[in-house]
Length: 195
Image (cartoon, rainbow, N blue to C red; front, side, top):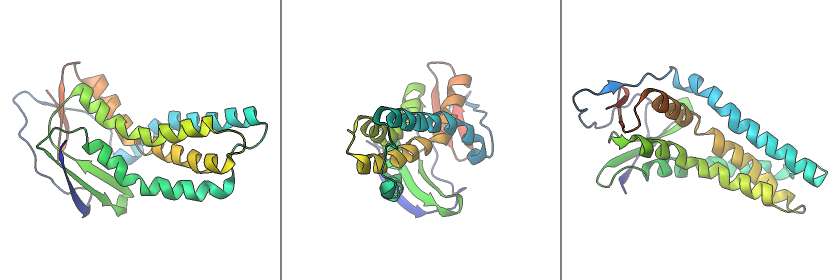
């Protein structure tokens, strides 16, 4: 596993040590600004979460969660943001450094490592944090009738866990549309590249 280095609060455009790009590397075209461009990628997971709630309500014949526990789910979701970034970091090769921190001005956390990854591993790196939404969604769906408080925690946790990777979903879309199957993807301080 890569070395994780906590860098704390940083400006969004802070530069981190880069690895040289090989000859012939090409830039990936990704929409800007990142936060606004990524919003449409949140619609399918959001619809899935509301669909799960409607299905559970129909199954139980009542509102499926205890609303008093929703704030606990939101708080837990916020506390899991560093875990989201650690899950990204776990995908980088041993011997590399992953810089993890926050940018409060953008209401964002980040994990940066400019090591090249095979395309399939880049996709896994982007998707791995979705487990923080998929697991609570599964618990929400499987929780029996009297567990309204558990569902009240799990549903907002699932929403946050599946919406927080919106920029990652967008990056996957760019990579899959623009790169050949055996490509390697590398981030730099100026964006994503492939070769």
